[in-house]
Length: 373
Image 1: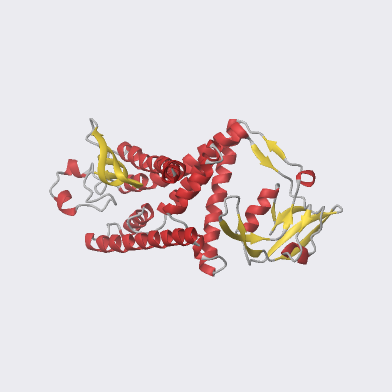
Image 2: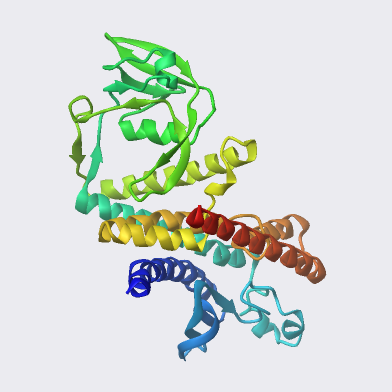
């Protein structure tokens, strides 16, 4: 029974969420590639041996494969799923055939086709957030302090209950969540908090403390805290509703917040302000999927939106074998007036594959360490 509960509670939600995100990502590549006149030979959900599949009238093999940890679109003339050109095969093609390969398409068509995958992930995230905001609205609270934690950054700076936070480093804030989002990704980073007190604005310098908190599922998360709390009376908790058009705008803002927060997190890793054990892999995603599933459908699709942005950003990393690496190659080609040689590309692809595999191993090690820790 325990095994069945683990499978239905964690594995199935994980597979469903990941499959949705991969499908949308690869469909972006597929649709723009086809629009650009590039032939697609395979569209796969998952890697490894095929479980089921069919071939459509355009010669594309649509399939579900055995390992549900990703997927790929393979274009005509590619050597593998990473879109490494098959130089020998392309060399024996007619000019008309070469024009239908990814390698033989015009530069802008190749760039558009490659960029379409991550862009599709961002669009999916915006759409999910827009639907959530339209249906459920958004719970917001005013950035008014109800309590200041002892020995906190806010207490040391002189914040008192009743203060309204109006700006952070000069940028205006409207809700308590704006404050939380800004501070959480700036541990051990000096900031200036502007509060309104008795009709006057006061600038209070402080440094958020790097803190470890435990969420409702027992997961430990490291972030920056300044030690302020609001409550229903001070914060005036309410649900803000949106028209569909307004919800799309909020979806764009929410997606942008995730992107900027991700870059801040990477910067904190580089500077040592956060530990690398926060990086998670498939095990942690499966765990999160199961935990969100226990909260209901809305929580699951909200997680899907966050992960969709993460997948889009990950694929835009300038690493060969990822979409960002291909875009770097195309940028170099645009500057040089000709592509890199096949030998240089092959070496770059091997290095990129090693980097991606190393990251996956490291993230999985973190996952297992967190589980047994």
